[in-house]
Length: 119
Image 1: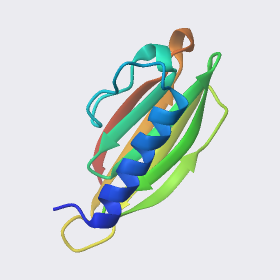
Image 2: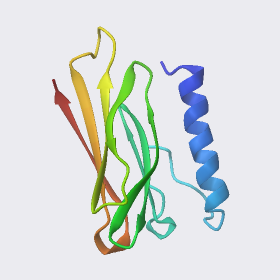
Image 3: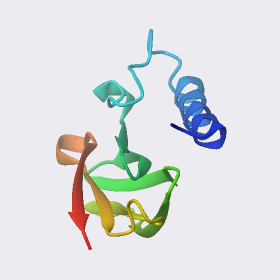
Image 4: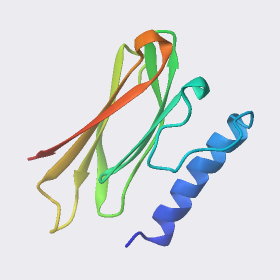
């Protein structure tokens, strides 16, 4: 079950996307990426949420927020050809788990990929 804080954080991120890209008729479900024309990637993984944008061929992390029971471990904010955010479990049920999300910008559009690993 998600905490009220986690839900508020995700709602705040969606509000930011809506206000910055109001030309879109509607935003997709939060687990999907925004329309490619928006120039943003939103990756929701078990470890947390990461939002990035492209500036030409370079990616830049706008925000990252760990899910409840996880913490933000490492990140490369960019701008860079490849950026990343890493989330690590911080309680007994997931303390050996880690999720790394990378963002690249082929053709100037963000593409996010997440890889779960065990420590």
